Structure formats: C-alpha cells, structure tokens
Amino acid sequence: MPPDSNNTDQASWAGLGWSLVAGGQISRTVQGKNDEDVFLNEDNDYTVDFFSCDDEHYKYLLATGSTDRQSDIYSYSFPGGSGNFLMRQNGMSPLIYPHRPIRIYHAGDTYEIIDENGIIYRYGKNSNNEIARDYNNYQATGGGSGGYISAWHLMEIIDPNTDDYIRLEYQSIGTMTVQDIDHNLTIIDACSTTNPGALPCPQEYISDITVGSPYTTISQMALKTIYFKNGRIDFNAETLRSDDIHGNAYALDRIELYEKSGVNYEKLRIFEMQNKSYFTLKEDPTNVRLKLDGLKVYDGKGTFINDYRFNYHTDYFSWDLPYNSLKRDLFGFYNGNPEDSNNLTLIPRQEVQFILPNIQTPNYV
Image 1 (tube, one colour):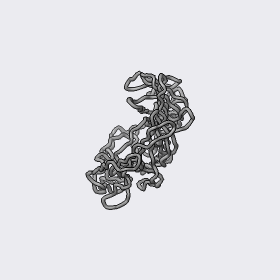
Image 2 (image 1 turned 120 degrees about the vertical axis):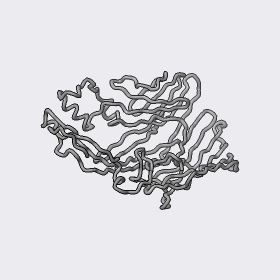
Image 3 (image 1 turned 90 degrees about the horizontal axis):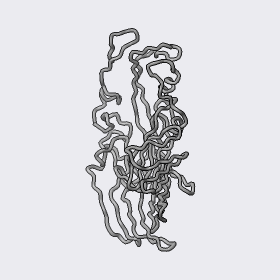
Image 4 (image 1 turned 135 degrees about the vertical axis):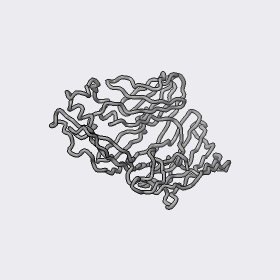
C-alpha cells in the first residue's frame, strides 16, 4: 500500500495513492464559513479592539462562528501553472500567492483565469452553461450541518489569438463519504467579564469529554471527454466500487484516445485500468480502499500491446478498523498502540494549568 496512507485517506477513482492529473481545477479549504455565505457579503470591521468590551456583540458573533473575518484558501491549477489565492471584499481582485502576472475573475459560482500569455481558462461553467463542480455536504460535531462548493473544474481553454480551443466535459462518479471520530475537552482558564448578563462565565470549568462523528459526503465530478483540434480522449467509469461506505462511487475503467478525421473519430489506443481489487484489513477481508494493480494497453482495434503491473509493499492494512480508529498518532497515522487508558480518546495526555475566577493558585488537570 502507499506508505503515507492514514485512516482517513480515501482512494481516488484510479486507486489509493494514485491521481489522474489532466486539465485543472480551483479547489478550496473553508476557513470558518464558506465565503459566499458570509465573507464576500460583508465588510469586516478590522478595527475592533479585542481588549475592550465596547463591541461585545460583534465579538460574540465571532466566538460563536456566526460571522467570518477571513477568506477561504483557494488553490488553482491549469496546464503549466498552479498556485493559491485569497478572495477580498468589496469587489477587490483576489490576492494571488506566490505572485504571478495572471488575472483571476469571479462571478457567481464561476471563475476565469487569464495567464501571462492571454490564454483563458474557465472553471465551473462553460460557454454553454454546462456545470462541473464538486459539492461537500457535512455533518459536524455538535449537530451543525451544511454544504458548499469545494471545487470548480476546468472546462475550457481558449487562445484568443488563434483557433486553438480545448473543451473538457465531466461526468458524475457518485458520492464519496468521509467519516471520522473526534474527542473534545474544554477548560475555562481565568474567565472574567465586565458584563455577566451578555457574556457570562460558564458554571463548569472542566467539561466532560464529548465524542463526535463528523462526516462529509462529496458529490464527485470527473473527466468524461477532452476535445481538442486533432482528436479527443474519453474517460470511462462504469464499475461501482465496494470500498465506499454507501457503495455508490465509480472507478475509472479505461481511457481511450481518438484521432479526428474530418467529422469522424478513429480510435488509436485503449488504456485499461486493472483496479478491480482492494486493500483489505489484516484480520478482516473487508474491501477497505480501491487498489490499482496495473495497466493494459491495446491499439484501436483491441490488439494487446503491453501490460504494466504494480507491486506494493503489502496488500493489506494493519489498522484495527477501516474508519474511526483510536490507535493513531498526532498526525493521523496508525500506531498500533493497545487500547489502554492512554488510548481511549484522541486527546493526548498532558498537564494543563488553569486558574479559577478570583483564585490565583493554579490548578492542574
């Protein structure tokens, strides 16, 4: 298996540890709330004095997550380029880092990038109003839930100075559910307030450990066809995978390359994915993660050309559970520790000093 796999990693439609890199996308990591819900619709007040209680309500909204002072973190990629950017309020241009002389335009649920050569890249929606976006629906610890767009796929590449044009079509490959477990413990340290009615100190200073089961359901889009001047490439996904919790995600079966001749297409190559097997648990034959065993190549007539085989260090995980294992280190990797008193929660054992109100003597827990 790939050596850097942890208990929450999911396999791509090709197989665990493998990714199909073609075209590009804009993806994001949500910070607080997704930008279109709050950040891009407000004008944040960055002059609030956090050492004053003059704006208790604003600080209460921040503390409870009802407002959002920061942009999500976006990553972009296109052939020959990649980087990151942050959105800004009041219609200002995104902040691109590392710096690159490109322009990023955002309109509704669509993005457009123009590179230093004037090439136009359209994400999320094309000129025909066809859509290709990934959606995340989540259930957080504590009962919160929601959904947001997590990725905008590259759909068009246009060179305005020539007739070069590349169109990318996408297909749904089902939904993938990612689940985990978390443990939370709250300690209130030296709480004080000038307005107990609006911002009271809690009665309990050490909470019980709460156990959460957050999960995210990702509606996945993947390449279906890439059209270019001299041909096209098809991506076929027809086999249901058995490593998804709900069993409705598809694996990549084959890639077919065509050459254009007039208005017709002639098949030149077939690349058949050998990914019908799975990594399992050592003590349980359950299919845990999709596994790519090899790749077979045929010509356009179906005549066999070559066979590539992939060997892994092992074909099974030593994990005790396919999900929600408590036997993991601080980085999420399985460590095999026995479930003794040190391993009943994911909270690392440590001594924490805290001070109760009006009592200067430190307490420890």
